[in-house]
Length: 416
Image (cartoon, rainbow, N blue to C red; front, top):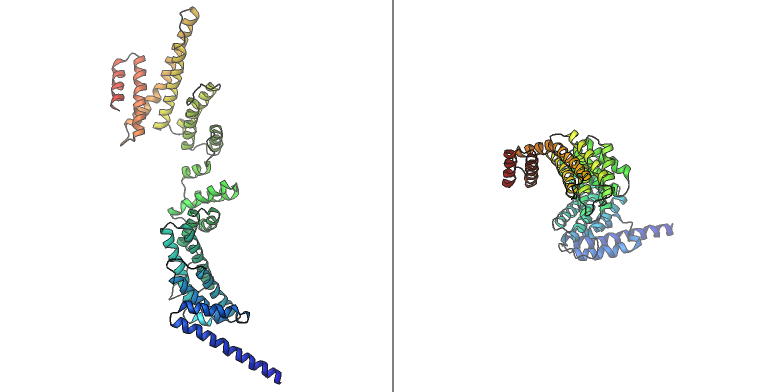
């Protein structure tokens, strides 16, 4: 019995000692001497025997949160906010009744959230994205913890998904060049199927990221979700096209693959035709497959015009394609320098082909010119294209020996 009594008395003595030491901590807190309070609570918790004292962890959380709040210049050598959050959680794990924190509606956690969120916003605005990400991520961890616990403060409670905070956290990570860390946050927003227009880019970012990672399944998932929520076919087709690099052959192959999937998309068909046009006519030395390239260009332009016959650009490029073919025939004609019977026959054949090519070119040039002329407030590029069409029409009417119309289009070209 004596031994048992001694044990009880010893326990009571230790309990009184714990209380006395924590009273010292409380006294420093009440006087606003948080550095001294930190020194005392650290010393108290450094003893393994004291680490099971729930109230000690509560006071540590309170002290460290205040020290983080006072650190306006960010000079602390330790993570005060992180240690405060850990301390509050340890306290609540030990005291299932949560007595100390219930007295003030868990205000310490809400204040710790505010502290990290406001510091994150400040760092974000100062373009210190690494710090902003750390603070936003901490704020989100605290918010998620509070939400799961079901806590509220003065009738305020956090939503299941705080879209603004999640977006800011992801943006901070992305701008800090931590793309892999940003994506899970944006996935939370995308998986919630948010329909506000400002969230469209998130689906695009996710799709692009996973395409680069060769994770086609996840890329397709977010492309599909984006299409459902934001029906803008050109945007999604352009995104799916990706960046095949500067190799023209690979780019053309990518266009052909995409056109098989989206055969009725005019912008895709038009871009492919322009890519082929440039591939055919931008050269230092005429390529060996020049005729084959011209044929592909013709077919691509015919397809684009079939999808949108009223496109000024499609008609313009088709007319330019015809003009280039006329130049080729003119070059061949100039190379014939003798008047043998054979050469005379060749000249006659070439002239017939030139006349036929002018007739092919004319309707596209005329339509392109008329469509550009009907525009309200045409852009500079539209005016340049219109001038080229005026020049092509002047050449056409010169060949037709229609001096009046040839002069009219020459004058319009000068005006443009």
